[in-house]
Image (tube, rainbow over the protein chains, first blue to last red):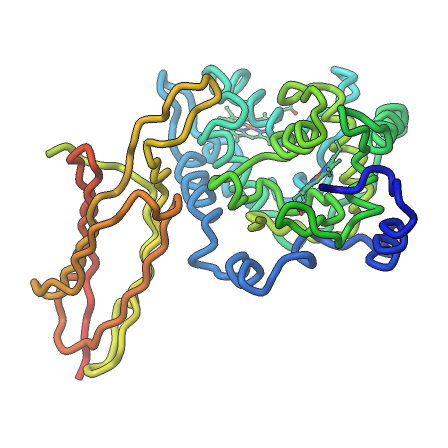
Length: 255
Length: 111
């Protein structure tokens, strides 16, 4: 079992030698993968996440039922939204809320297409999120945070360092202190978000950032938040800033 | 027989030289549900798998595979064969609900 709070000095030393605190510079989860999965992610044909990218491209050009317009008819090619992706989540000064990519897509479906928004984690929403993020491949995650979002950012950071769940572990316990260590067959990475949505073998499908947060919350037996919930948006904002400079690598492949 | 509509990626060159080894790669989005897993509500998730995959080249059968539930979701397949004449490469996929998907690509072989 995973050591809790380095109860024994020996374990502490073991983990310290594996990873001495936070890494000097942020590393993508890609750096923690074995050769086989790295090759799969890099394969421009066989990366399974590309199935969703393809579907997203088709949806982008498809008019919704009920006479609305296709995304492409207002926005042009998906690439036009590429600069947006590495700067999300961002602060919306009108609604005075954070917005992330899934939320913006759903909002456009409601306001501009006059359809019901695709549910979180539905194939359609994953596909569109994957398509737009794929367009941003290679662009560096931004560290820009609007002054109005400073408090949200601070709450996101506090979330990251707060111990929670029956196991009383924080995100940082696993993704900073134990980054590089093995946990149930996984190598724990730094918990970066530059590859999302990711194709995760454990899930055998594509999953969003918030699905990952929920999974990590459940891993320590903490109650997960709902998709799109404020605390997760704040966490997502903090993680974007924490990983600033990392290239978008959607669709990443992970164990 | 119903039609099956699934995202399928096919990699096949369109023109090759006679005698060349051609590679055909397929990636298919399918849950390959074993029928043994329990869903979040505790109920068994019904079995849903791809049952057969056939590949024809210029009307000759190149591959005839029967798939098992143990195959992981979103399966990937790679085949290679020697190009000796121009003709269609036809991919036929059938699931356990008797639904079929057919994808045809033309392969041109130049001497």
